Length: 302
Ligand code: A3P
Image 1 (tube, rainbow, N blue to C red):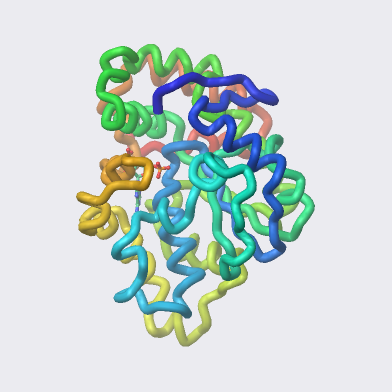
Image 2: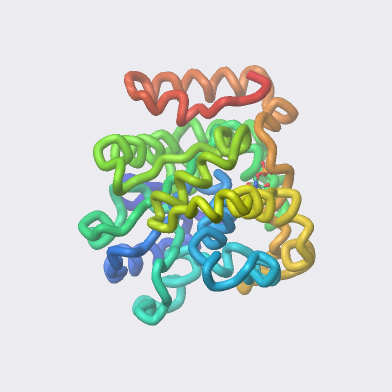
């Protein structure tokens, strides 16, 4: 969202989170019970955070008293590189009750070894890159209106195709986690935004099982899964006062994280030439990998 991209260990890291990423990489000590939510930016991180938080904390508060009613999901599940390690290389994270839930955009290859070596869980969520690009364009437009005047969609597509996106190249990000999820299905759960938009109940149950907080039969009978799904839905979260008018501690408006929440909005913005270029590249980069569909996502208009 503005600033520079630094190339670091094969990843294009935004200058804003560079220092935080290095401290996170060097100092983070994972607990076996930790859950780390990982996404490429604009893939539905806010949604995943709300779902994971609601799942893990349902014993502590009923939804009618959930902290999600008064705090943005990014406040409750902070980014390791932006929020936690940004200003303090040695934050005290030991007193947080388990499961501790954190998030990051860091590529697999750059994760701290304690995440890889411990029994902690990784939940990865990806999204069709065309929708991500359009989402990102609006996001930077809201944060820094002058950037949108300075960067056209055409330029953004060009940068995407050269791998120049925050935490990119995108294909390395997806492939890293896809391979890890294939090799270590108990360690890495690979989710897709488009699948969750089609049907949320089964991914939600899978997520709860994976996090070690499965829904009991009683909870299922009482409709707890559906309740959490609709509580965390785009329309519900977007309309909460905290997300409409509240501010994030960095001064950002919380509403920048809620725009349309749809699949296939790219068709309203990208020209056929841009789409062809991006799709061809995705075919090429994800060739031979069963993550092809995953990386490309399923676009409604495609
Ligand atoms: P759009 O810009 O396409 O609407 P992130 O949370 O990773 O920054 O991603 C933001 C994208 O997720 C935005 O996409 C936003 O509208 C969408 N989003 C936010 N909350 C959502 C929810 N509860 N359900 C579905 N999509 C959501």
